[in-house]
Amino acid sequence: MKVSDVMGTRAIAVRPEASFTEIVEAMRRFEVTALTVIDADGHPIGVVSDDDLLLKETDSVSAGSVFDGRRRREEHHKAAGITARGVMTSPAITVTKDTAVRDAAQLMHRYRIKQLPVIEMATGRLVGTVRQSDLLRVFTRPAEGIDREITEICNRLYVDREHLTVGIEAGVVTLTGQVGFRSQISRLVAAVRGTDGVLDVDSHLTYRSDDLAPIPPLL
Image 1 (cartoon, helix red, strand yellow):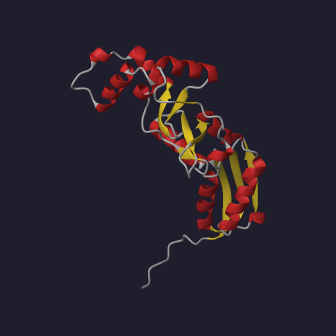
Image 2: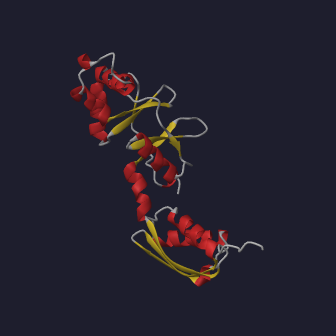
Image 3: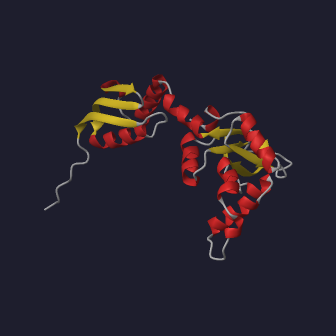
């Protein structure tokens, strides 16, 4: 699944000169926890989150020290900011509509952010937003869609789907039946586990031929 399958088409953005109060009001009005900061051409240049705004209350600018690390200095700078440009995190980490949902989730986890601006690949302009809650919709994917993708995986790995029984319940896929070769089991399980909407795989597969058995040395 791609970001375009789950993203919101409403993107709440502010200009760099937006005041601290305007940012807070926009967050309250649209019930969001982050805003994208865009330039005059609609290109994202940063993101302001509620965590950035809270630094105004939790950080003391006067507590700055020459011994502070880079992150601490950035927090002091944000705490002193009075416009979007001053409090935003920059550069903005963005995705496109064609970005895989799994890749978007990895970006959010890596950078500890709650949402990502979605840009048009050709122009770089903001066209939407994808949030953590949007990505979680993957796990409510209908079983029929997961089943069809498992059939495609079987075809790709030359596994006869007719010899398999596939059960799908609450995101857990149960595989029973027989494949042609032992090596196909691990590849099939890994591919199914990597399918969007799958939380885990319970494998009870057997095989007809053991192509992983060690070959005795020649005497």
